[in-house]
Amino acid sequence: AAGVIQSPRHLIKEKRETATLKCYPIPRHDTVYWYQQGPGQDPQFLISFYEKMQSDKGSIPDRFSAQQFSDYHSELNMSSLELGDSALYFCASSFLGTGGNTIYFGEGSWLTVV
Amino acid sequence: DQQVKQNSPSLSVQEGRISILNCDYTNSMFDYFLWYKKYPAEGPTFLISISSIKDKNEDGRFTVFLNKSAKHLSLHIVPSQPGDSAVYFCAASEGTGTASKLTFGTGTRLQVTL
Image (cartoon, rainbow over the protein chains, first blue to last red):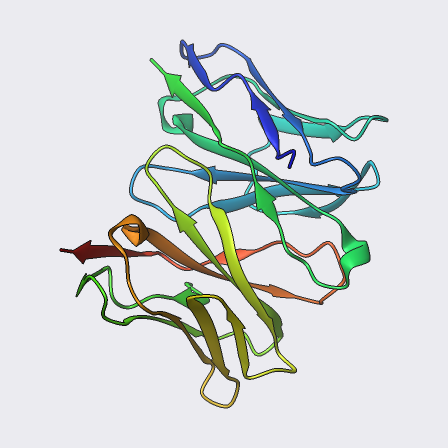
């Protein structure tokens, strides 16, 4: 079965640079979530989109922005990168029509800021 | 403020025995609970979930128990297998059927020994 696809899998950027992560949800899923997991930490919710509209916002820095496009893929844009932004970024998707809220995660994108 | 807590950072169980992973939460608005399994540098893999209207859900070797009054849930794996060795995250959300974000626990590292 198709899963959540994230690209790139690994990314190295310098401080103050910009990075863009892409996420392709499971087909027919209408909701996309972004999570950040720092070393030794649990995943922290950043932002989510339902039907291309922002639905919830978590601990996302102002330097970050995201959107969901007409084909339901999502992009997370990170500017003025800081060393502390180095983390594993997960995208996840779900389909509210199932009645539950089972969220499926992608493999993650490793961002290293040097 | 950690709303979902997994107080045991690690657990070691012999192959064939039962593994019991525990999770406590403080937010009484949580009504949907999920368990994820995670290998290093990979995305969380959904295992099993339970809605607050139930107190037990079973899927193969995995059973999740929910005690709403105690705000406690547990994941039982029986029999445990070496391939079950991973970090297990408990997660909770509010509002079944809505695009609700997940709040994760800090994870429990399960080691299944031969």
